[in-house]
Length: 79
Image 1: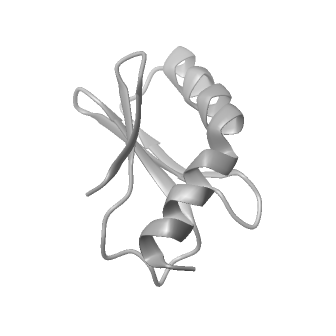
Image 2: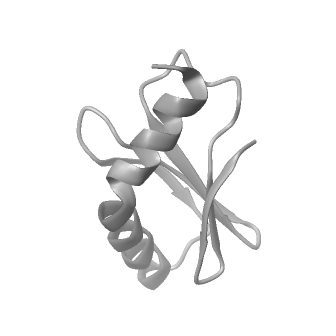
């Protein structure tokens, strides 16, 4: 499970067997987790146990790094 970014205690990563799904990024911090679709638009798939403040931070981080995440996804899965 390649980690793409560690920032403010959040770990952004994807699983190595998810290439049949559209590009997305997982996020974890402590026992909280989430998934955000990167394509066709940035959209929350789910958040579990993140506070509202953390959710806002995650969206800001993903928005700022969306292209980087998509680049890592495409490089990893050779798309």
